[in-house]
Image 1 (cartoon, one colour):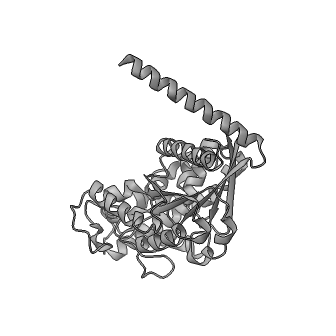
Image 2 (tube, one colour):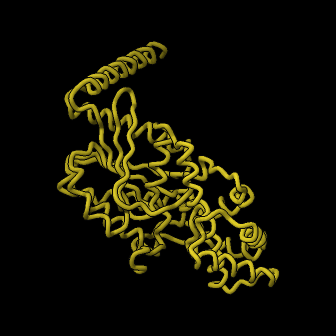
Image 3 (spheres, one colour):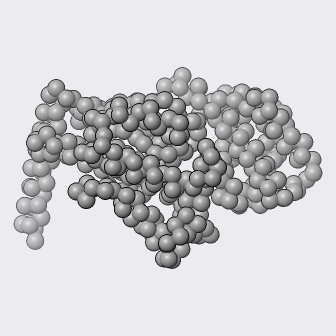
Length: 355
C-alpha cells in the first residue's frame, strides 16, 4: 500500500514539474498571456468576482479607490432603506411608532434630491438608525425580502450604519465586495500566476451592452459564465416581464454555441447559491421550470438547473465545467478560482502540445 502511494506521489510530482516547466515555456514564449472573458446577465455577480480576483491575485484596492467607493456605499445604503420602505408599503405593514413616518419621508426626500451618494447628515443617519431599529422594518418587512427582491447587501450596510455614517468612514474589503453599481462598457484586470499573465474582461450584462463585444473576444482561452441561480422567480430589470433565469439560459446558449467560442473552454458558475438555499425552502423552481417534478430541496433543485444549462450545449465534445458559487465568500472563491485557473492552464498547455 505504501509503495502504491509512493509511486502515485512520484507521478504527481513528475506531472507537477512538467506543468511548471511548460508554464515557464509559455511565459517565455511569444504568447505570454491567458485571456478570460467573464459573461452573464445583469446582476449575476460578475463585478463581485472581478473584485475577488483583485483581492486574491492582484494588488487589491488602493487607498484612493477605497475612499472613492464611499459614495457607492452611501447610495447602496440609502437605496436599501428605500426598498424596505417600499416593501412595507407593498405588504401594508405599519411602523411600531408612527413617528417613524417622518424618518421615512427624509430617506425618500434624500433620493428625490439626488443626495444619496453624499456623506450622511447627522439627521439622515439618525433617521435611518431609528428606522432600522423598528421591528416592523428589520423583522416583519425584512423577512419578506426575497419576495420583493431586496438587494443582497442591504442587511450588511444597514447593520453598519454607525460605522458608515462616521465622518472618517473607510470602506472595508467586505464593503467593497458587497457594493453594487451597474457595469457599462468593458472592465479589465490583469495578474500574474507562475509567470503567466492573466487578463480578465468583464462586459456590461444588460441587454443593450451585449452585441457590442462578442466578436472582439474570439481569441480568449476560456469563458466564465455566471448565472444567479437565486433569480428563478425574478424578472428582468429591463422589461419586467422576462424571467431572469430564462434570460440567463438564453444568453448561455448563445455564448456556448457561438461560432466565436467553438474551441473555447466554458466554465459555468451557478452563483448566489446561499440565497438560492434560503429561497428554495419556500419557493419551488417550478415557477420557472414547469417540467420539474422533483422534491423541493437544494441538491435536487440545483442539480436540475445544472442539467438544464448543460443540455443547452450543442457540441457533445465540449465539456461544461460547473461550479456552485457564492461570489461574496472569499475563501470559497479562492478555492474555486485556483481549480479553474489550473484547469485553464492545463487546457492551454494541452492545446499548445506542451502537456
